[in-house]
Length: 205
Image 1 (cartoon, helix red, strand yellow):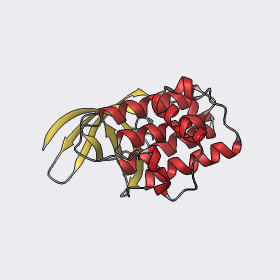
Image 2 (cartoon, one colour):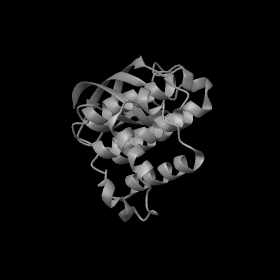
Image 3 (cartoon, helix red, strand yellow):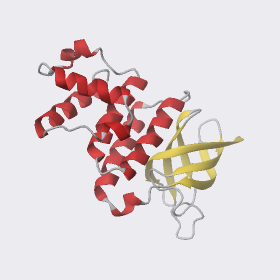
Image 4 (cartoon, helix red, strand yellow):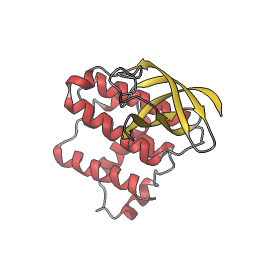
């Protein structure tokens, strides 16, 4: 068994046994890590308040042949607005689900990790959470190799996309969130964008 220090975002958390939690942590160097936090469900656990979903933490972990244990955890950043704003927490949780599903273990993940932090900060900062989330899906598809050629996007079993929607996807792919939130999309265009980005995510799997 060896000790390691890692930094990561908690993208999944569930009860494990009677006293423990099982965490899914996205790290920049090693991709996704699954780790057990022993005794974390006890009332006086030292981990209380540290291992909440979406916290960015410094971890000390012990790695064995078939398991990973967290021995220490220190918060680097949490997202305080999520506790009081269900809309922000909802979209941030959707981000964590995509990260949990599409990232892999034992793989350099610096680019998707930095995108995740930028996205979570933007969801907390801006009141255009839905646009930030759609931008995240497009940017994540590009990083994860799921972005189709826009000219072949009809292969995703969607109706023909308008040129304006293609332009929107290109814009979101190439620009930062502070520019994305300035987009003016009507209800119909936003709905078509949501359908398209979801098909991008599902296309390869």
